[in-house]
Length: 527
Image (cartoon, rainbow, N blue to C red; front, side):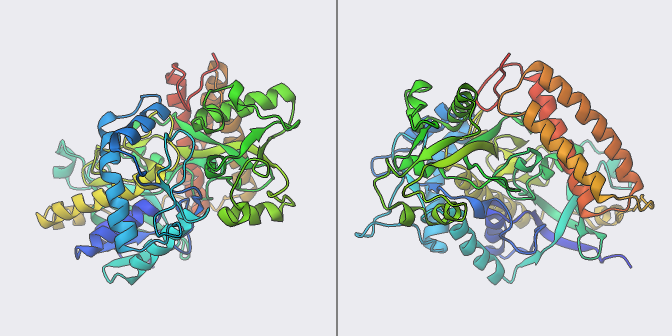
């Protein structure tokens, strides 16, 4: 028995800060929203893992100062108009939504003023935080608002399979002859039933996060496999800056499925990177030392590891941080204690790990993509704010602001009754299951994932060469072809969809990295 077709005014795919904000803004204006998440609850994504904080405004700050810091960190490969927009509008979005409307409990001094932190690449302290679990605090407040709204229907354990478009899916010739391609919703897999549901939407918002889990070492949540990149590409959406993948310089050196992040805020409070002999080394690589932008710190760590032959470097907070470390960074303190490291006395062994996707689906200042009725917000989108390298603590701000703006833009369009016609709804067919061979083998899927992650880490990682990229391109091209055939022959499942999306995302990133021969920021070409 097939699942009932659903219709909604707005379909939001993804439940992080960007997706939840878009849904919240739409619901506040009385519109009906369907919000889907691949997890069993709304807090399974990357937002809840964000430790450091969210950019606000310093005591003697200005939009110009923030704009300058973002441009410098991004190697001036940024879209200046988007950077200026974030610098001017971002702090107001933080105040109106997170502070005034949701009451997120950001840290304050005894006099009630906000405790503003400073991180790498910032010229001054301007970052709001909740100890070292800022993302968790923001998400808890957003989730409460989303769950309390009668206008938001939350569907958990749902995986988006493919975007519905008029050119690719509509059966009526009127839509195929039209020059305008439109998004009409998505095919969505119900993980419990194993069936694919057709969800028709007047507007669709992609907010699926990044792609860190296609690399061997990552700080990202399990679902960060580049799904929006894969679905957007298949639907003909323009992509931008996908070769710029940021590696966080300081992840806890401990074998795990997800590398535990040691927040940049620890260095912001004075911690120093040292080698195995306890010697600070960052000044040898950049005059800004430990507070240089992430791409520079990451490469410096890798150079130091190669020079010394050590498996990691160390982050020394015990001898350099003046505040109570356990109180300021309770999550990090607890996690390190579990690993037998008391950060009040011992340096923390750290290595770089894939962390943030600076590129994605190209969008304008409202989150609109090049496919009509499709928006992208958060890490899966390329607004142009980050350029070739993201400035610390701008990710939550970008997700919040563009989530807000996408919601507001959709509200304006819905008020004009720009709705999908009954004719189009009837022209979109339900999912047609092609595969009937029950040949899904967990061992083969695990091997394919190991191949993808090792290939991306070794050949498309922190430092790239023509030879490495060519090899990755050829091998991922072959695997993609194999998976296309396998996808058509095998009954659909979440593991199959994830593998298909992840492999295609890896291939797209590799292809663009190979084409871009100019070394800049996160895209470091050794040759």
